[in-house]
Image (cartoon, rainbow, N blue to C red; front, side):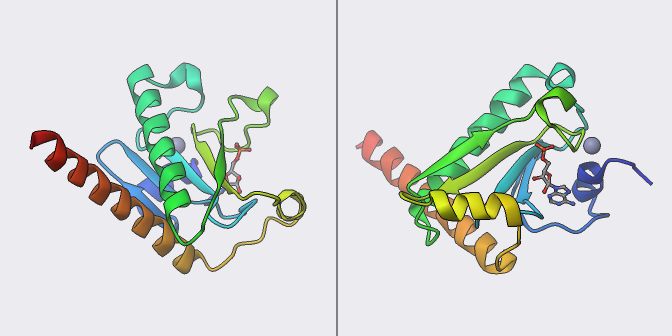
Length: 153
Ligand code: AMP
Ligand code: ZN
C-alpha cells in the first residue's frame, strides 16, 4: 500500500470529496477544514515538496487554486475572498508530504469564525459544500464561454 495518503486519494484507495479533477491535478475538500469550503489542490504525480515539483505543474496548481477561489466567490458559499497557502517543508509546518495548495474561502468580518475553525477543524456538510464549489466552477466556465463568443463577434 502507498504510504502517501494523497497518492491513495488519487488512486481511489482512500476516500475524499473531490471538487475538481483533470489529467494532472485533483482538488478535494480538506478533511479538517478551517472554514467551510477549505479545499486542497494537489498534483496527481507524487512530489513531496516544491523542490520535487515540476515548475509548470506548480503553475497549473496555482491556476486551479485561482479558479477555485473565484468559484467560491461566485457560489452559494458567498466568499468575499480566499487564503491560498502552500506550506513547503516541515519547517513551514507541512504535515502531509505531498505538495498541496490550500484554498480557504473567507468572508468579510469572519475573524471570530475563522479563529474558531482554526481550533476546531470540523467538517461541514461535505457533499453540499462540494456541490456548491462545483456549481461555482461550472458558472465560471459559462462566463468564459460567453466571453469567448463575444470576443469572436
Ligand atoms: P499541511 O499542514 O499544509 O501539510 O496541511 C495538510 C492538510 O491535509 C491538513 O489541513 C489536513 O487536514 C489535510 N488532510 C490530511 N489528511 C487528509 C485526507 N485524508 N483528506 C483530506 N485532507 C486531509
Ligand atoms: Zn503522494
